[in-house]
Length: 168
Image (cartoon, rainbow, N blue to C red):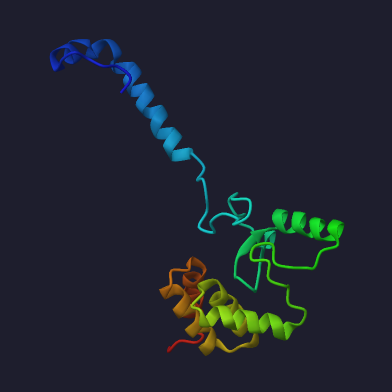
C-alpha cells in the first residue's frame, strides 16, 4: 500500500485515477515473487561460510567425524591454512583429527549412525547400494527418511521404482 487515504469514501473517489498503475504494480510484484531465486536450497548452507550449498554434490565434502557437508571453497581455504602453517590435518568444522585409514572412516560413520544422524545413514545407503545389499540400504534409507532427510526420500523412491530391497 503506497497511498494512504483519510477515508474509504476518499479512496473510492480516487480509484479511477490510479487503477491502471495499481494493476501494473501488482503484476510486477507477482513477477518478482514468482521469479525470485530462493535464498537457499534443501541442502542448506555451509556451516562455515553460511553461503548456500551448491546443488552439485561434487562441490561439497562430507566430514565423516561430524557428518557436516562443507563447501569446497571452505575446505580449500582450510587446506591452504594447514599447509602454510604446518598444522595437523583436522576437520574444518569440529577440529577432530582426520581419519588416516578407511577403518577409522567407517568407525566414524557408524558412530554417527548410532547417534541417529540422517546424513551418515544416507552414506550407509550409498555404500550398501554399491555392494548390492539392498535390504540394509533400504532400512538405512527408511530410518533417515523418518528423521527428515530429503535425499533419503529420493533413495526410497528409487528402491520402490526398481523393486530392490522391497517386497514386489
